[in-house]
Length: 177
Image 1 (cartoon, rainbow, N blue to C red):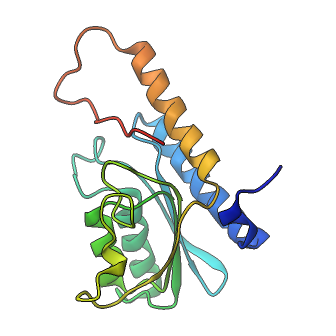
Image 2 (tube, helix red, strand yellow):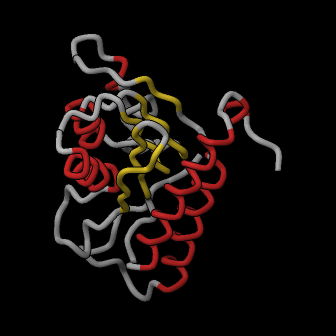
Image 3 (cartoon, rainbow, N blue to C red):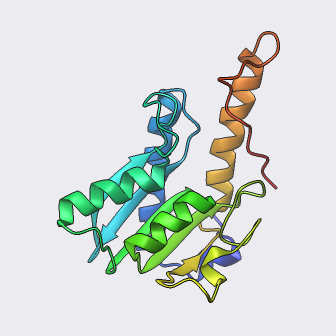
């Protein structure tokens, strides 16, 4: 399989970590949630995982990143995750970018861009904002095609099953480039 330009500078281990995040995203799909997955890696070992569950948990903050950060903080016994890398299949939103900064994540690696709510450059770049502290290094577009295809397939399935106008419980569709 040919890799994109963003992936050429990423080693096979990082691609493997993003594939694990994709596995987490599939868990969200099984539960009817938007398929976004995340993992936290500390010293080369996965210490926590998370996937979207805002609908099932009735929690608007239950994004994959937040769930993975909470689990990692509990496992490591510290909310400061400054020696960790977060892999997530979709560009984080502003809420998740703020959580990543507060957790002091050292490195953020994301897959598909989110042109509606992406806070790593698509809509706004909170990691480039000099007035904010605790900046993570950020790499986007890793396994972007696979991550984007998973989201696109989820929403295509959702549209094919939809009968009548969408209700208030419908999740806003993410438009991929």
